[in-house]
Image 1 (cartoon, rainbow, N blue to C red):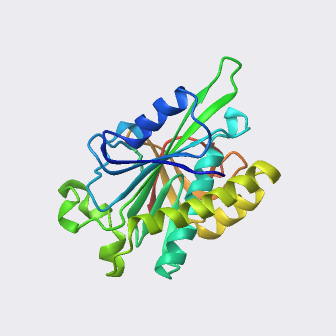
Image 2: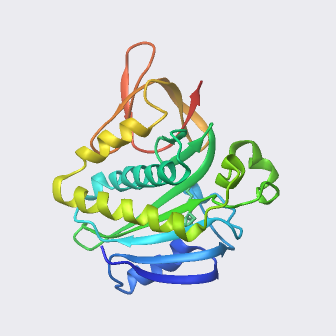
Length: 248
Ligand code: BTN
């Protein structure tokens, strides 16, 4: 994939900026990078703190897929970031928590927000793949209320790796997986996701809008990226939305 970099000192949100470019017809591979964001957001429109030192970017993709399997693109990004970080920091301690959090010792180092638009024929027109990685953020820059859940790679490993170096590695792996996905389907990515996740086999609670709506053992993920959960009474249900908490 050819990458077309739009680099900014500061933006409200790279996802919003990329969304405008995509609407205006920019090509796949357009990448919006900001050194800091003033209105960064995560899933459920949560505030995403984005000071200097983090890697905040959004990639415009135009995959040829059915909208029903859009969650696959998030799985793919999760695998790419996890592989890249494991290679750079020479560790096996980085895991994916379904659907889109990358954790080190149960603390979040990266969040992924995929937003898509459908055309008039209900075909996927574009996907904005927003990725935020706490690369060189300082402890005291993490908001107090989330300090216990968030970590930066610099603080975890005691080394500073240039954010651009991390970006290059993530993009290199992401584009390779993306091409493979478009050619042969999601199978190879699913296999990698299963090797890199810390969710399957665990007892999990599914939350929707902060309410627990289901609880049980995480068995697998299906082709579309939905999490399959078995309750103690044997009932099995799939979830392709919401968030989970994991009981260790
Ligand atoms: C989440 O875990 O809720 C997803 C967080 C995604 C944050 C990234 S940072 C770059 C891009 N721009 C945004 O406003 N959000 C995403």
